[in-house]
Each structure stands twice: as C-alpha cells, then as structure tokens.
Image (cartoon, rainbow, N blue to C red; front, side):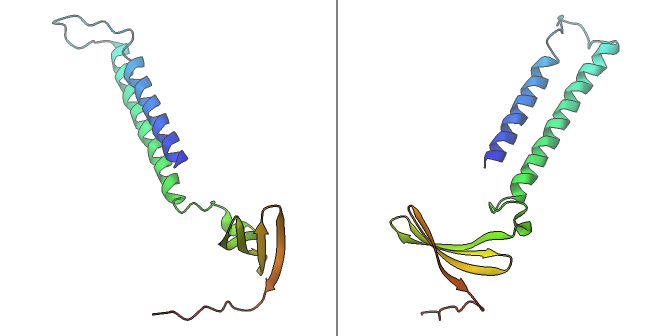
Length: 131
C-alpha cells in the first residue's frame, strides 16, 4: 500500500510540474494565433513527453503493487529460513512452525523467551472435518 501511495504522489508531482513549468514564460495576446517558431513545438512536445513518462511510472508502480499483493517478499522462495504458520495462544504467546532447509520445527514464543518445543518429522496430520 505504501508503494501505491508513493507512486501516486510521484505521478501527481510530475503532472503538476509539467502543467505549470512549460507555461511560465508564455505571453498571451488577445486575437493572436498560435505561436510560431522553433520554441513552440518543443514546449508542447516536452509536456506530452513528461505526461507519457508519468503514465509509464504509474504503470510500473501499479505492476509492482500487483506483483506483491499477497504481502510476501519477492525473494521468499530463495530463503532457507521461513515461518510456515503461526497460532496465537493468547496473552502474547504463540506457537510457530518454522522451516530451515527442508526441516520443520515447532517453536513456542512468549514475552522474553523462545523455546524449541519439538522437531517435526513426517507428513502433517490434519484433523477430520467436523460437520
């Protein structure tokens, strides 16, 4: 969500700069036609180029937010240490299943203390569904 806000803020800033910076030294004369000369085409092309750049940046930011929508880090698959699951026991106490290089461990966590409860071996056994 922070990346989306930052991308939106950058897009608004870039848009406001292009909208006001290109028109600072232009003089409007009533009844005059469009300005002719070498400087007229560059100002409009600079504004459209900046708008395209801003749209591209917004697209890249949106893609990054979409790619990371589950909240998991991009390189999580490459890490050897991972937290597989956590369960709250209440009063700031948790059971954590952590894995390291294919081995799983059950860890108890409470304020001021972390204990290894058990090394987990074999496939996990699921409880039968209650209907």
